[in-house]
Length: 116
Image 1 (tube, rainbow, N blue to C red):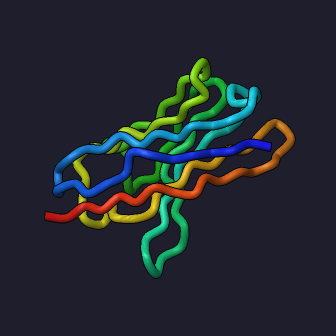
Image 2 (image 1 turned 90 degrees about the vertical axis):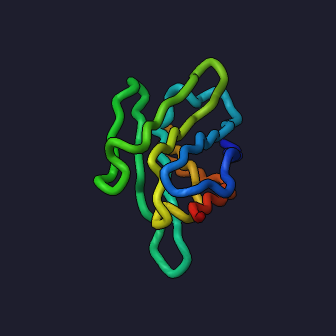
Image 3 (image 1 turned 135 degrees about the horizontal axis):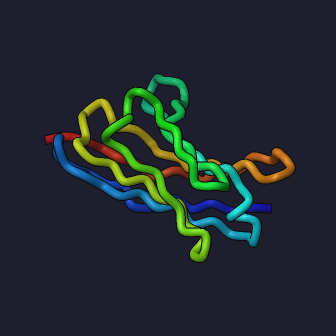
């Protein structure tokens, strides 16, 4: 069982930055595929970024060049650095892990609001 806890959300002005964190329990973090998603009111949950066990990354077009996913295996931490934030980035942000057996886990989410 993996427990994920996101943090770092908040209110930020357009053009600002935030760094989200996701703390993961368990010893298999380094062998998990990690992703960030978000869900805005009235919209489907949207994939944002992933980082593989080897450190390769991939991004949705909507955030490419603005968001950066990273992880620290020693600390069991996943991060999402978000720059040049826009009002349309307002959403509940979730981290997700898929372990080596294909089991998926979600955190409870952290709210990001971009507004002046």
